[in-house]
Image (cartoon, rainbow, N blue to C red; front, side, top):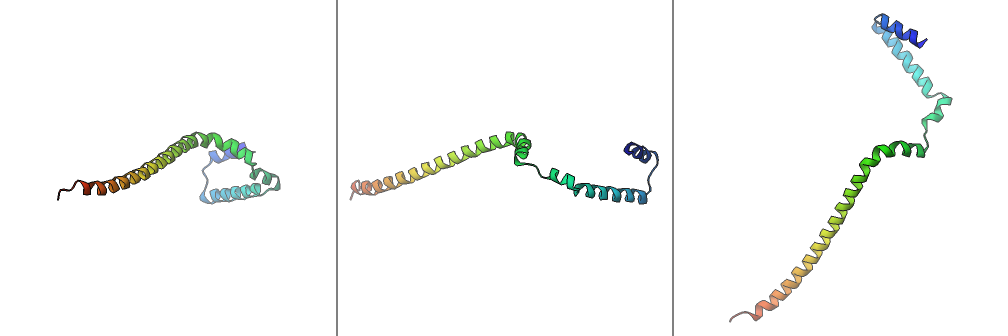
Length: 107
């Protein structure tokens, strides 16, 4: 039946009114199929199925991003440690410079 409809549709040009009626019928049939009780269970997939489908898609992208994120965090933490250590050294040098500057003064 569907093949006959397709051949008939290709054979003769449709008027806008006929095309609109076919579109309205298609929408009604699609809506009926969507809300049919036998199809309702197919709308909800188990989580395992979602993981099985999406992991191969997003896994290859996610792994390099996570590795790069970890590297950035490590570098950021190391920079904080260097800056914190550098500030302590500057304070010690400043304290030594004040004391040392007075001893070397010529009066």
